[in-house]
Length: 155
Ligand code: FAD
Image 1: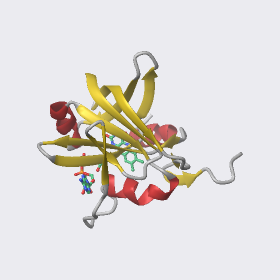
Image 2: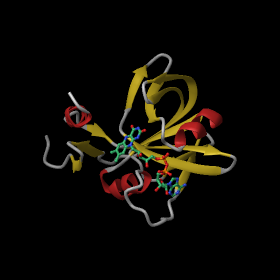
Image 3: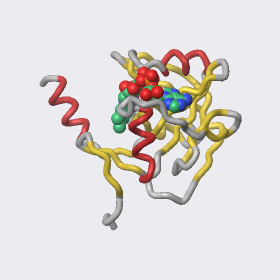
Image 4: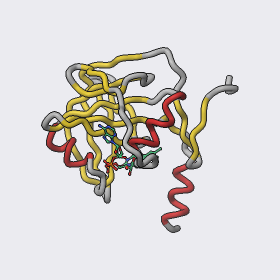
């Protein structure tokens, strides 16, 4: 088993795409992430997994807040911007949810306070206590086999 085989296997697991946003000293930073899941209903907890090289890692550690923005099918460009795949600087419109930065136009915005952080291998798992949610009636963006997809045609 090598890294490529591991990545290929994990890529078979179809996910949505999120942009994690946080704010430190007035600066908003975002990062594309699909390592996200719901953890608990009572209390309402979610988890995200952030790589040790990601700039957002220390920002979340220090700010102790983040928002998970579940991207809509028409937001692939935002996924590429916040994954560093589109290099030219772009103006991005942010909302506020419970005082935390969020991405306008997302299917769902989930505002969180960091409950705990666990370092596991080369990633840090942040458990987030959900403090507010905003929903929009939009179809989600899908990511599988390293490619973006839409749900159109799936019944
Ligand atoms: P940077 O690389 O500096 O920032 C990312 C990009 O966002 C830069 O281009 C920057 O200009 C832009 N940006 C940041 N803030 C703003 C702002 N306020 N306004 C405008 N642009 C801004 N990595 C993980 O650790 N965990 C995951 O779960 C994960 N899932 C991924 C899923 C997908 C589908 C993809 C494509 C990538 C995923 N990655 C994941 C990789 C991760 O998105 C990239 O490595 C990312 O570049 C790391 O971001 P960074 O925090 O180091 O910051």
